[in-house]
Length: 325
Picture (cartoon, rainbow, N blue to C red):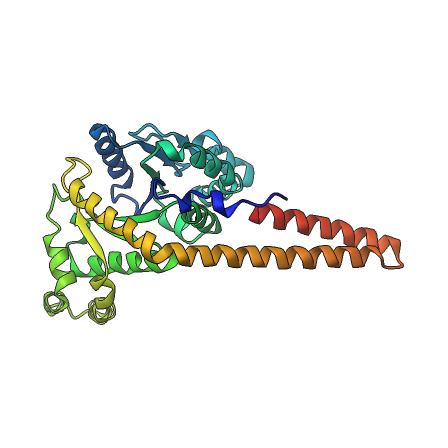
């Protein structure tokens, strides 16, 4: 198996394109936001953008996708073939696509010198990407090669109640600690309702708890308690208001994106390199163990047992090499 040369990775280049992973709840306006983002970048003329769609169930997308999961995996065929429901088919489609993501990465590395941004649209079923093995593979593979930022999109009008706001913030917190990459919180649809109330609640937790004082339900009590826990989370969070419909707030978003990229370059690069070295060490150790066990089993007196064991060894080696190649 050929090893990827770490010295040739775009991670070492200051001219690497910035990867923006757009994540958010269904209906938050992720796809529309990505379309506005792509138009804003292309309209400036100076910015070269590459778009990727990872939502296999999308009927139509308003932007031109340079790489589209729907060209590789047929969502409805996956449902029929594996007898799955909609969410199971989305998860399985992502799993199938992630097995070939090394080809996507190779294509991005080839085009990297001519790109400024790579923007990626994820499925509306947020758990299918955030909590799946395929989501982790895609995210970590990108982060090992390029500066990668998470843009978490929130539906502002639907978060104007303290309880629903807390639900969104808890999910944002879980995404941040699961993916562990620089993070920008985007309050979308500010053309419908301003996000000022959200900034007030984040900057002044006492105000948030005061706004809940009239609510005596268990959920309100839990929200008050969680607001104490999330104070540190708010303190280190970049939050901007944007409108995918009108393009408002894009300048503030790109300023936050520049700060996040700087954080990646200063705080995350060394951690990612150490993690990559750790993965390489595990690969070497596991490969050695599997080869040694396979040779040992082949030398056993019972040729039949040795043959069967070697077949299992070859299968395990194939899985390992494909997983890390």
